[in-house]
Length: 460
Figure 1 (cartoon, rainbow, N blue to C red):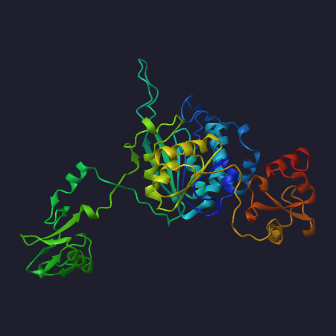
Figure 2: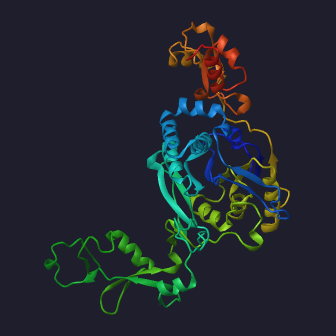
Figure 3: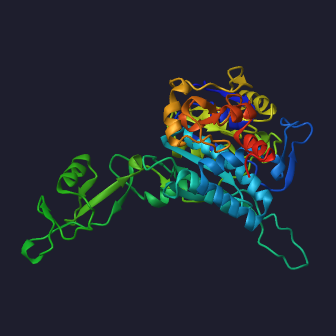
């Protein structure tokens, strides 16, 4: 990994993401702008004072290069985004383009065993789902979690309400591949323990007993669907405890199978071996941040929410990335749970909030690394010019600008995304241009090149 633990970048997250090593992150949580058509700012006097962001999107907010990059590299994704413009307008298209170029990089940096959680609300959740299906694959969609963040925001009125109150956010959870694991386990409350584990054995251990599916029978011939006999007992149906004969013996040796006084078998399940129950996908037990946890940062999320995600989808020592880290809730939760973490936010206020919160909530101060540059990938790559022959074949001798055929010697290897903007020497970021197009493009983007060629009449 080419970025150190406890690093916060104050920069646009796109070039920073482009500079992070491929398949180096275990878990990504992002809480981006929601396209809510609102402007946010923290109250004066709060810890987050000075933090603000605009959540209104138009095509003028989107780099033209992003349009071309998605259209060229991910045509199916671009069509899905284009459809959003027809149903919702140009603002949604602009927002999705902004998100898509970043999600493509997040997919690249995520390990094959990794997970990603995108926090959103109903404004764009359906469009983001289609976008993530296109990028991560519809088969890697795992869950849509509903977090009840507040009581209803619909105010009482003497007039008829036009909608239900909006009091929930969504988290779209995707796996990087079929190798991704999940442990959605929670501890039982004291009342739940007493209700579920009613019995106490001779050693004072709490347990509950399973039905006695296996029992002693003197005439095994009367049970034609017999699975097996064990210590004079018979399993009369395969759906019994679903234990093999060997496993049944193993459980007996552990003391989990007990012969009752009535001659039947009892299977005990102990509290000490209980792994926890799943939360499901409706989370109404995590309250918004309150009291000392509140920083005043707009859209702040509770640490408990992030702790649940981090526990379920990572292990100690794993790397957690938050590319919209804001007031550093993800960083604080990851630190508490002994994970490594990286945060990115365009606001310089984020690093101050990380320092303040880690000092106040965990007692760590001065160990945060603040960077404003773009990291350089540590992956060993051949000189980018060595791809010239391969690119010439892929492009069939055509310049990727003016679309004119040229001899091999007249072609120049060019970076589609300029290196100054985080572009790399990987083959998928390289193309061949003729000398004239390469000169026209300069340090600009591919979309700017195409725009200039059209203006010059070279392209229609």
